[in-house]
Image 1 (spheres, rainbow, N blue to C red):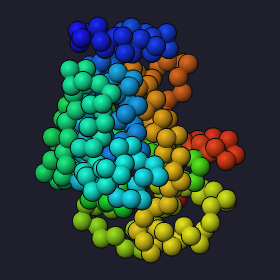
Image 2 (tube, rainbow, N blue to C red; image 1 turned 90 degrees about the horizontal axis):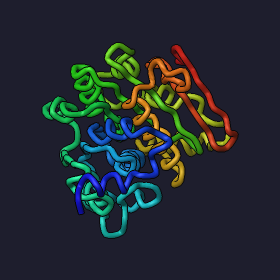
Image 3 (tube, rainbow, N blue to C red; image 1 turned 120 degrees about the vertical axis):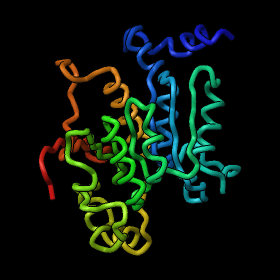
Amino acid sequence: MDTEFGYWQRINRNLGIISYSDQRRLKHAAVAIAGCGGMGGLIAERLVRAGIGKIILADNQQFEISNLNRQFASKRKTIGANKALSVRDEIREIVPANECAVTVLTQGVTEKNAAEFVRSADIVCDEIEFFEIAARVHLHKAARAAGLRVLNCNVVGFGTRIFLFTPASMTMEDFLEVEAETPLDENVISRLVSRLAPELPAYMNQDLIYDWVFKNHRAPIFGVTPALSAGIVANRVVIELLGADGKPEIEPLVPMPAYVAFDCANFKVSKFVGKWW
């Protein structure tokens, strides 16, 4: 099939929501996604279907059984397989290489490769594992040096929180009061929770949350919610790539310190600007 014809046939129903010229911009855009688990893999899949022309993936983890409740590319046959490679393989089931280039870093984001990871990107998604401090710091430093925006989202209960970091905004390091070498102790975990997951919903079991976060160093995630979060972030990635600034019909994301939250349990949308800690 002719590459150009196949691409435009595939994304045909995008047109009308966005323009032909907008779609061409997406066709030539590149998105770097650090972390291919709960949200990262789903974000990649949505952006591929939207017509993004290049996806750059990084993850050094392998799928395990507990990932089956939520993670794109997590299947019985991929248990033990690298997450980034598995997401790439799933993308190849959707589109051929000549319609979407996919680059994979199976070692995840490190101090040595962070600059290379973001080099060809137009925007970055930070979906690194919640407790992986060093990789997150290296990613944000590299993105700032490259003049790139970073979108970060997480899952909290039946909802999501979205944060935007820019080269001029508060940095991730200042936000969490960490550096790459900061050890993960109880004080750091408390900051991670209170800052990346503000306003814990009342319907969540606080005792179980404590066990998960402080004892197991993991975050509880309900299986269907990552799709909500990933869908919201993928839409915002597209909006950012197409230029939200200056368009009165588009509500811009306010850079950090700020966040937007949405919860399906109460249909509450929260927009907070300024320090909440």
